[in-house]
Structure formats: structure tokens, C-alpha cells
Image (cartoon, rainbow, N blue to C red; front, side):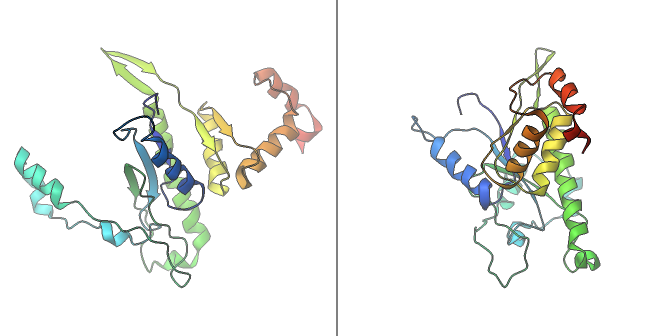
Amino acid sequence: MATNAWVFTGGIYSGVTKEVGNAYDKCRYKNTKTASQIPFIGIVNWYTTTDYKQLKQNRDESANEKPLDDSTFEKKAKDRVRLYRTRQPSDKEKPETYPLDHNHTHFLMLQDEFKENDDRDQKPEYRHVFRINLILDLRAEIENESRKITNQGQTYSIPIVQILVNGGASSILTVYASVNRNTPVIVIQGSGRAANLIAREYEYLYGKEKERLGAAYDRATVTDNFRK
């Protein structure tokens, strides 16, 4: 909180993301009378958000063609405010939807090509992979831009790190993409599922060495474990 970092998550009120949201809510008031202004941003899919229709806007296409003065812009901004009520979907409702976590400060909501009653809805594995790839691509762009800061015409790189706690199949793809962009990843061993799998495979290849240099990788690639 003291470093003015930006925090990105999956944005849902479920699992690890929910726990991270609760931790953020507790920490932002620590040792201060006012809430911390650290951006806490969730990247979520529009159609997998529970009750996403609460957030729908009434668009006036003709109004987009007219220039807006400050008062008109402010009025339109207020008209776009929507109240979202967080609730857990019942067992009878369509699966694969999650409510937004109320502790986040911002959300980036992605609308994919799958709509309600889509014929391809009969192939959930195809839809799931498409949505994962959509979020991964956007997250990659955000990471590339967020590591840059410009001051007086000079561009500087700032540190960025990814933390994996538990996680599922999409988390493994996220870690893979981050490592390929030279983004450091902290894997919390013992937190479950994807994190445990990555930690176990890492130890299987490299042993318990603390060395992170290229020499350790070169040694691992010539072992029988790596070839398997």
C-alpha cells in the first residue's frame, strides 16, 4: 500500500480473489483516517458476471456525434452510474457466473463473441478457452504498458510482479505468458491447485536450488526429468 502500486485481479467475489479483496479492504484503512486510493482493478468477462444486465447502459448513438461541453459530459457521466447488487448465484441458475467483488475500485469488463443462447453454448470448453485467451491478451497489454512511466520526456521501467495463490487452468496460462515477458512470478507453495502444481514441477526439474540464473536452467535441460 505504501508504494502506490496498482493491483490487478480476476475481480470476482469468489475463491482467492474474494480473500484478496477482503485483505485490501482491511489494509486500506490501516494507520490512516482516509481510505487508501490504491487502484484495485478487476479484469472480468461480461457474460460470466452474475446479473451483468444491472450494468447495461442505454446508448444514444446520435449523441456520440455531437461535441460535449463540461456540464453535458458531467450529466451524462452521472446518468451512466449503475447500482450493482452482489449476490451468489443459486444452484439452479446457469453455471460459470460469478458476482463482482465489491472491494475493487475499478473493473475492466470484456465482452466476447459468445452471447446468450449462442449455438456454440453447447460447447462450453470452446467458449471457456476463448474467454481465457481474451483476458490473457488484455492482461499482457496492461502489463507491458504499466511497467512504463514517462517523466519530462524520459521513459522509465518500473517493477511489476505477479503472485499466484491457488489458481486453476487459466492461472497456469497466465504464469506462462508472464514468464515469457520476463515478469517475475511468486508462486505460493501449499496454497493449492495450480500453485502447488507449478511449485512441484519446478522442484522436480531444478531440485531445491535457490539459484535463478541461466546456468540452473541449462543444467536442468540436460537431465532425464526435463526430457520426460
